[in-house]
Image (spheres, rainbow, N blue to C red):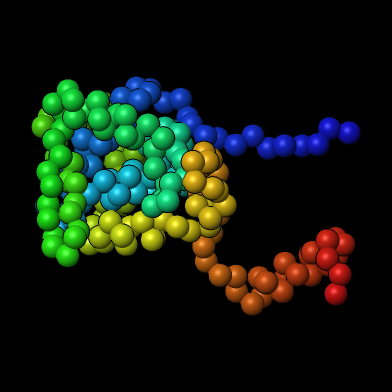
Length: 192
């Protein structure tokens, strides 16, 4: 008997490919130009949340790019080389903002307008909601917030399947927990 192994989605081939990530970096950086805090951690988390919330809601992410678990939370696997390439090609600059107490932010600032040709209204809605969600948070707060169940199921460097968006960080209600225990007992998965 062959054991069933569900296939997980680590990337989604969407029109534009990696260019979608480049344009999304430009879009998020433009929209966050007046954010109180906007460093690299926050940039990663905004795009991650938009991609995974979109996948959970409609079965399709915004960028479709592969993600990995990092110490400070999920991030697009291609983020560093893409960001570096954009910097080298003059599409973005990085401004250092010193907040004191040893906190220095690396703020991505766009030098060109994003092209939104690859994105539909729903894509931008998920990104805008993600920006709004993280707007007042610091990089440390966005990092901590991203360390939910999906992140906890992986080790640093591991790919993060889009299906991890279905994992919930909410505690089970007493009735849900009781129903789950009964199901486990009825199926012989545990004994009393």
